[in-house]
Image 1: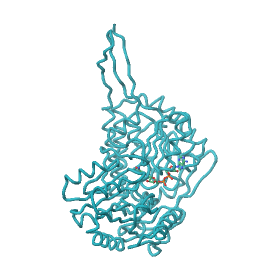
Image 2 (image 1 turned 90 degrees about the horizontal axis):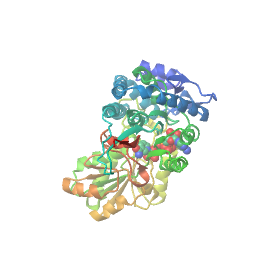
Image 3 (image 1 turned 135 degrees about the horizontal axis):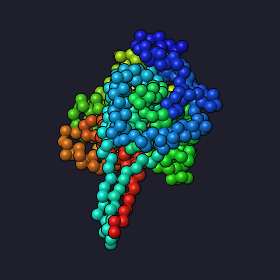
Image 4 (image 1 turned 30 degrees about the horizontal axis):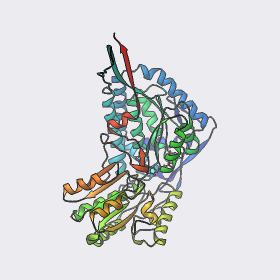
Amino acid sequence: MAAILASSWVHDEVRDFLSRPGRLFIGNRWVESTGGGRFWVKDPAAGENLIEVARANFEDVDRAVKAARKAYQGPWQRITPAERARLLWKLADLIEVHGQEFAEIESINTGKPISEALLADVPLTVEHFRYFAGWVTKLSGETLPVSQPGHYLAYTRREPIGIVGAIVPWNFPLMIASWKLAPALAAGNTVVIKPSELTPLSLLRLGDLMVEAGFPPGVVNIVPGYGMEAGRALIQHPEIGKISFTGSTRVGREILVESAARFTRVTLELGGKSPNIVLPDANFDEVVGGAMMGIFFNQGEVCCAGSRLFVPTSRFDAIVEKISGGAEAVHQGMGLDPATEMGPLISETHMHRVLEYIDSGRRQGASLLAGGERNRNAGLGYFVKPTVMVGTDSMQVAREEIFGPVLLALPYEDLDEVVRRANDTNYGLAAAVWTEDVRNGIRVAERLKAGTVWVNGYNLLDATSPWGGYKMSGVGREMGPYALQHYTEVKSIWVNLG
Ligand code: NAD
């Protein structure tokens, strides 16, 4: 048994859950893979195996799609919008009731501090389901004042697409799943969802709650497995009408190419290299706190991580020195320890990737002010110290997404220059500006090519505020009414009354 299960921080419900093997969730039943395949899920803080989970293959995904089709054509069609809304509310309530359990599962599986799971992952998931529950009874069409000769009733309907294939990453497994499940179900679709092979656990727990909430069999099906197997099976399945993907830009591109074969609808939430811009008049303490939260939250494994910090030359040394001191003081440890401020990275492979990026920065002439190495004192798992480097825009560490706790500080002289440099990236997910002059902050925000811009804040997300990327950070938007457009087709109906 994994050592973590002996820890006094683990509640009994979680220990019970982790003592059972994980299965596939198809048609509201827990089943094994037809191929009998399984894979190990690890505890990244200890670097040891935690629990074995069934590994979905092509046939399993097909079974899940069939269950989703049966539900879509049957009970899910007959349920009224008000009942559908109540199911989503009920699910939100159940997640809230089991919030501590979900936070522990998420913390154990991803390594993130329990405080962050309790503050962000769980409540944002709950609110996401509630927000979209509210939309179910408000998804209406229009009557249209058409000008054709004759007498017509012309109107529109918002119809579900059908079966949605959802693929999610490992950094916020439950929360990002809710970004897809909530609007897809609100709009009347059924779903087959694939968690990351690294972090399937919270979604497996969610399956139990789908049954308890009263969702008919097949409305949501969960198929843990590998990208090259279960993921590809989903994106190639002819009955999937829409793929909603969050993950790397590399896989997003593959999905876009694959979708061309059948014109499958897609939304893609991809990577980032977000600029965090300090204007000369910014408040010192707010900037230091905001920059650290922007890059070190969730170990820097955040798509919108503020990985490029632009600081005016006149204030560069003071601000960067303070941030480096703060980085050195961050307490790293296993996620469940309440004292932990930063956990391990998700896997050994990812840890080596992040360390290699740090080395490439050094080789290309960046100076290292904090961290820069593995933290073996924090545990046997995949800990990398919070790292601060000073460099230039052309370095690999300035251009590529590292997806770890690595901040690159970049000095600048004037406003036009910093806006140009901030926009000089293939990505465009998020950005931030720090200033005491809000008018100036808004002017800069309007010039930045990013899906979200925060003025005097970072990592602010809400179900009502659209989320998505410019350029290679994505296609489409999640959250808010914008998300619903991506889960519906609009139909025009003409009735000749003449
Ligand atoms: P990834 O692309 O490796 O994997 C994401 C998911 O896709 C996983 O479930 C994986 O199994 C699956 N997958 C992998 N290859 C596949 C294939 N060929 N076909 C179908 N599915 C496949 O990404 P990751 O490492 O899990 O997550 C990190 C990335 O996600 C980062 O680039 C990050 O920026 C991005 N991300 C973006 C957002 C956003 O909202 N824009 C949010 C979180 C993470």
